[in-house]
Image 1 (cartoon, helix red, strand yellow):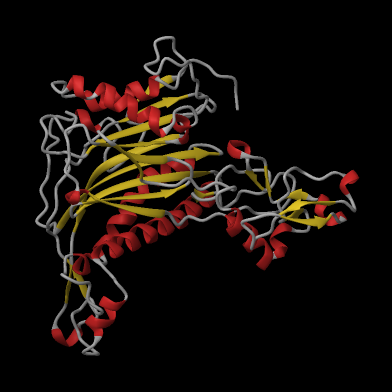
Image 2 (cartoon, rainbow, N blue to C red):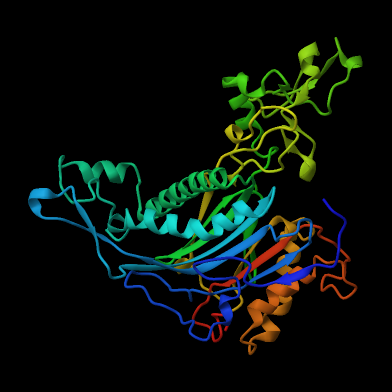
Length: 434
């Protein structure tokens, strides 16, 4: 990481379907869906992006916009396998996304320009099931077994499960697109991805990486995502190395020790743990245990194969351990964890918001500090139509070590920082952040 220099504020560094500066557009309006559920304005919230200049280009990218989902119609009865995509909108949702790139901005830029399209296609493939009282066994409505509805009910399959599946499939599809595009252009890199989708009265938060989203209310702070790092996914990564030891090319040990072992440790009984263990035990140190560990370091310094600080994300298809042919991609997952927030079940207040941010913010501010800033700022600025964008700017300002930091602490983030503030009470005056 390069030495810190005065950062530049960049707006609109993201992409289609809407730039990060979309909240300033004069034609932005709340859009109502024909389906049930509270509707958020398409550009609710604001992305403020700061470049710490660790690279020439901003590795953080943002995108937001309206998701216009169309439905498929089946063809003539005698040829039901053919589907036609109806031109009119059938369901409307809203989309916000943050991408934190590493190894260059290419993967983050591709993700910001691609993921929303992948998601729209995946949602259009299941939209008929989403709006049904219960997702049917056969999307065409054809009944093979009279007990099909019972089987679906026993599995507990709901409309939100189709949205979750669409998000998971969209991340996978986008990852494949990024792999092909980067290979074709001779570029490298990867990115984390944090996405929020408002649909049918629910907010879906999908995370692959170490960005974070939290819900902040007057009397509640609720995490909406979990970070995926080599430490948090240690057992999954170790198990993969156990099943496929050839992935380590005899250069690494999958076992975890409190520190890297030295020659003097040979023959001694030391603490260790393997893929099947959440606790610890002791083993007699052998020569193979002196190899570089699969996961090394602690906390923010933990690295996978001595290279990468995250265990999920998009891209990195060509990434290899320095001076070896060992690939990291087999250990990385592009599949996100999806959290569902039932917005319709909340008694929303005007200041209830979701804060999404890349790890540059969370490196120096805790959930509690961010919530304190939100609660301190919003109630006194209800008449300000741009209060959500100003809150996003204030959150970033709090990471820059200024004397006038709202937290009173001179904390500095040396990473790129991007923030979305999404107001959940779209009926409040100025809720769209105009």
